[in-house]
Length: 267
Ligand code: ARG
View 1 (cartoon, rainbow, N blue to C red):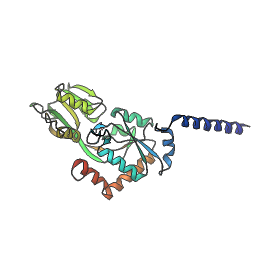
View 2: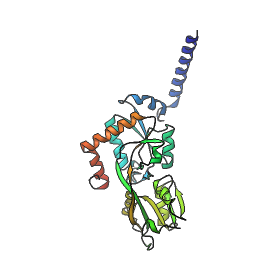
View 3: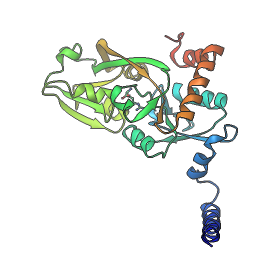
């Protein structure tokens, strides 16, 4: 009797789910099925979040609007190698970790530094890029020569980044937080702030892209390593991405992508 009841309920549930799925329409990324398929490497989708305002790692191509960059090429190659169908999702940087924690996304590739604090709530893949922080100021600025001269200055940063954490250590600094790094750098160009603390390769790329009114000063602060973040409860995703990364490093594909974006051999 009880068993029949259970079966009946199950049948109703399956029917309701089917109706809901059909009702969803085709174009929406169906998140639930993507996660259910995760056990099947042949067909499973991998929803990957990224803050796409961080050239040359992830940004929209000015001509086509398509997302491009080192991280974009890398995650495409990794998914191909690991047998995932990539679903790339642009979102704000400080929303990535919460999205991982609530399983809205399966991974995040966003020039994200592997830190002990983040490791408490998400897992990280093996390192795929070595980075560090740098101070950017207006080219005409003569008094800020690096991190030591930032005391009491107006500093712009991107929310939730290691650059923001570094700015918070500066005595009496007046910090302005932006959703995008681009906005922080523009604020500097406009002279509304004295400095930006950000990842070296990104600020260097910004200067190279015709922003000669901005310069980088001082030494690169503290070695940072980027990793792909994965929810704690998806060890199989982590394992597959690490396996694929190892393969791409061995077969030259990683070096090829690295050279394409940085013009040199991987460090
Ligand atoms: N590496 C820095 C961090 O992990 C900044 C990363 C920002 N990435 C981005 N796509 N906006 O905090």
